[in-house]
Image (tube, rainbow, N blue to C red; front, side):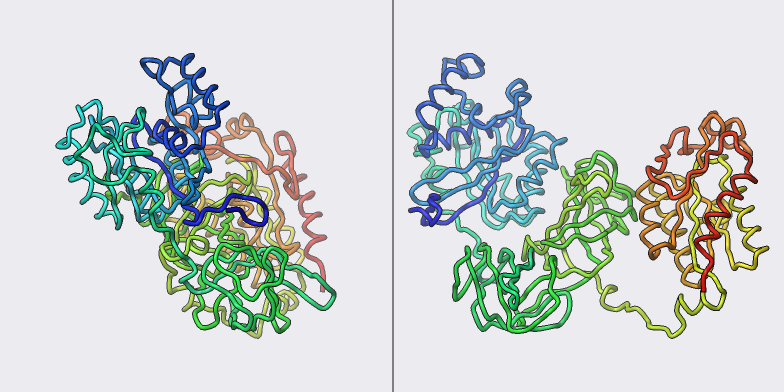
Length: 623
């Protein structure tokens, strides 16, 4: 059976599954053998596989090494392990499959999470000689975390335990309570010898005591999720204009069904409309269902854009900007609370930050551990906030509207993935209070334009000296100012913060928020803070309106600052008496494009302040 494009369609639908397990348990071999038994290895590829197997010598007796079918990376072939996630499509007369071969090493947890994020079922391998290992628990936990509720436990290498039914039974008996405790609701188990094909494509004569179906038949009969039973949800990916008087809203149906005449609600918000037309694959249709790419027309003009969600009016999903969620960290640099990342949920992309790491999870034991940051491959339960409200559903209910990724704003690299558990009520209970006296009135009364002048640079570069001179000139000229010095603020507002990277992020966040309030009052605010991280300086900039933020890089070399050492801090840092000191054992990320660049190695601070005052004066004078 084929579709309109000629692609093979199987009557049993498409099943996405993963293979996972400990290193050397035989995942790649099992998958390769599964492809072979399903008739998905062409003769020319089989001949090449025979040649490669003979060259590698990894399988005794000249047998075929089926792992070579899936271990595509050279590093994997050389080491005999799976590193990347290898995806394969194959099909039988009964069903189509997409399988992800996931790595077993602990350091590749992020790869495992990637493979599991779209899977409906997991085939978990256990070496019959070793039994359950820490990786078994880890992978079962990750499967449950990523929404997989069906597991096939394949006890491999049964030939190395003399096909013992007792050995197999002991492993299954130990695994069942583990899986059930982690939320796995459907468990099938079978004994296999992947390298020889026992119980892979057909039943094994060497284990007559096993009366169940082989692996391929279990996969063919596994139930496929039916998202069509859920309420209609569609993130809008694109607004099309097929004609001057018509608009269409294109996207992929995440769940439910849609028909002409259905009532929809646009989220976030409460505006409603009725479906007046549907196109599926470019052709008019009366209805659409989950998984289809569609274009929807409605009966009225609404302001709809990419990232909005169309939902059934009688069963809308929730909207929030504060969430409780699990986060799997994939970045080489640690996740720091209050650092701003891009969050992509459905078709929406917004700024987001983890506000609180409730606990970190020991993936081997599921113990809850205290944490102030997340390192590569670590998992935590967190509170998270976004700059804009998002339509969402719990990940358990809807992966599209419950699963998100975090993106580094500087590199655009994906550094984390998350699963929303629920929205926090504070988002619904806190509202902006409208006031009559606003920033424009306050600044007009003072005869100035509000401005935040943010001076960054190493300790000893001269930031505070220059800012003090500039503020004095501004005050003498009759302007209303306030200076927020990093050291002074640490005596009060930020007295509870240390100098770890996490504390530095929170220090700058608080300074930015206070400076924002002061500019809202119509003031000219000078902030003097090392603010070593570009990400946090960018966060500060984004708190202000157009033309209200001036980043000033007071650029003095480490040698110059250390020679000045006005507070004796460098000497203490070199002696080891001060930890996490910027420039010594903590990094400083200089601005790449500062608004003002002051070369402070050999310049007179008075001259630098005069230059800065001239620039500031042009910004703040106005009616």
